[in-house]
Image 1 (cartoon, rainbow, N blue to C red):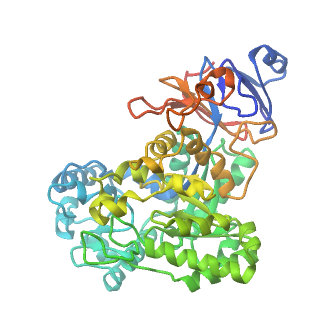
Image 2 (image 1 turned 120 degrees about the vertical axis):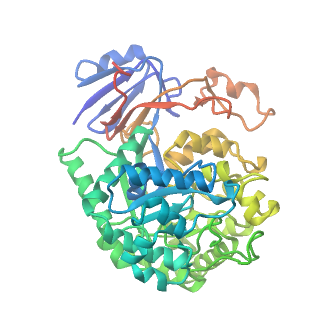
Length: 539
């Protein structure tokens, strides 16, 4: 195993706040301190790195990712930011001319941003692709538009609930279409997409991802591929990659165990999404005559939580709308009545998204030790009085969404992620988004958000040793070029000035004000091994 010494920087080590150097040996942090003492660790080091004043932090954790989809999004047509329906179709047409892929894939379209205020149709997609199979996912990845050639290859889609003759698929039809897509894609392509995503994660300073697999999201073989990649890294047959905690979003606990998963959890869907009008609400959407769709009820939640607790793996659910949250909280509460609250707390179960919850529901989750795995960029992109959430739900309902501060106040553990490819691997952007929530009362400090995106991700996977630079912790770190200053972001001006003075020893972080550029990663170590390095950045 490698011994690496890094010196001459600023090390974000809460127990050693003035550290400027650290040493990692055999995958574990064995020392932090100042540059003068660092010379004692240089002689036996395999590599000595001069940080040049750069920042060292624990590597980030992305607590909600879809790796194969992320890899495919990188090679498919990017529809994020398309100015109009016709701009999107022009992008699709150009991509169709440039690729020989068996299925044309696209990600990121959002009709709420277009002057036409509608999705493209199957016929329009057919013309843009010259009649080829195509699957274009909306930005929330909970609905899509399919071409005629794709439907001809997967005719079962047209018989599923949620299919529309325009080519738009929601709910069950969307799930069936995804299953059809798996059959059309060579497994080698899926493996390459997974590798592409893991390398991109490392390049973003991420040392661990939580893969949210599920029958409607990926074939089980993807999880087997991830296990094989981890084994290959462990025995030295592959360079280091981010660690992967695997989840299987299914009520089938035995299958999750057979796949070696951390939990039968993740995208086990209670409901859908706000953007696709499929999240389950108590009151109808403001812009559609529907209250969304509930896929599971409280009784099913109760049974699943009991089964997972008995099996000693994590339970968890994708849950967004307020009706879905009510059902999942009722299910957890009933499970606690059967098992005892202590057993549920010990299970350390989790929920994904949890976007609309009451204070009482949050309090129940906090009392039962349920982690809220949330995505700060959702508010950054779709929050605010003019955002998609306000369009879909009205301003009052939208204002209370993604309640990080309220969650924290009642003891709900937070873990942050991207839901990539919904939003990209960009952890500093996520930290900034949490600190600058559109609703001021739901903002948390940059330090709290940073902890949720580092140590919170380890704890969400029931691993308590990582996500921090401390003696004995895993040697998973990231080195950053920071364009601005290192600061202590205080909640408000009433905080005493001494807490922001470097002499106080309060760990500093980059200035993440929205007007300041974000840090860029130059080195990521996972277990003390290089998973990413910017060429020529370090000596």
